[in-house]
Length: 491
Image 1 (cartoon, one colour):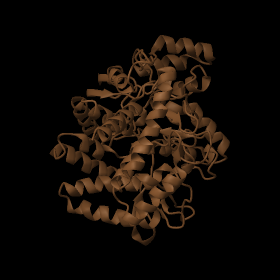
Image 2 (image 1 turned 180 degrees about the vertical axis):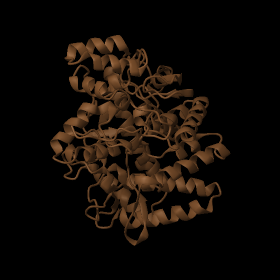
Image 3 (image 1 turned 180 degrees about the horizontal axis):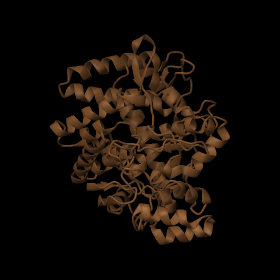
């Protein structure tokens, strides 16, 4: 395996397990004793790391069974909990089920141990293998908490994200040491919008600091005409701790420098769309991934939203930044021939002609002019409306952020985009399709899932792990959309 960086990923000096344990971590992950690479990445050591590593090095050659015994003697492995309470599927309303699920997903803070980062407030986890706080997931989860009267928990989570920015200078992908080298889509300003403390000076300082993070280092790119926009990035270029064996395999198949592929995979993870044809050079194979060569319309639309929020709070520099970004998005992320927003390729200096749900982000954050918004909505209606909800893309690649999967956050973004641009009936139609998909699966299995097949119904598929249950953002968006539909019907 090619050598890669071995320095800490973050200014806080917190090392992920792959750096802390080095050869031991690699040996365990590559031995195949765990089906999911995240299992050992989340293990808690039972004594000092240096003592564990010294004992391992003294072992000499160790086979899978030796490693299995070594892990059992030196680490506590994570346990998965069933996030779905037992339900009377025929009688229970789905909103009631979601309300009963929150306590199972709620955590009363977190102790800093193993790869887990300590947290001082209550929060909600997605469920399944996702045992920690995640950045962009949490906004969509919080929508449901607001809809179901859990404002107290929303306020604590907003404080948690501000704590993370204060400590690390950004919101990590999730609250594990191996996530500190990247973030996720910048939605903290949207969380602050859900808070009762929208003008809290501490929260505004955190928003400004997050903006500084995105406008520095590898995440900002200079383009033609002196314009600057942003891309997804990761400060590390080695296999992800939580997907170690998968990343090794992808790099081997690529025929490219391994460190280059690993950074592209990590940047794809920062996007939240991990993974999708949007990031693939050939649109099909993961080993052609080139996330850092793409200027995504979704990311830049969200940063426009962040800049606009800071401008509204009285920052004239952010007002100018938002205006410049709006102009750059209109120029570089707009496909005039197709009539929708899309990603810009720095390699080809062209905008994609593939319709994806990302086209609706500029409408969601308010940076699309009325003409572009109307044309984009027409394209979404034509290409993306499936029987069970909004399509993610039109391409089937086996990756989870492609067809035929639909995802809760994209349903919310689309509905908000439609409503804010004069299409409330279309929003109600989409919300009804999504809720019907979720209800049908719930009635059949009693499960709330991470993703769904919006073409045929049932569980979504694809990607690096089996579809997870719980599930934070599905619960949040479904509860919020159901409340909106109920309100529109009663009104």
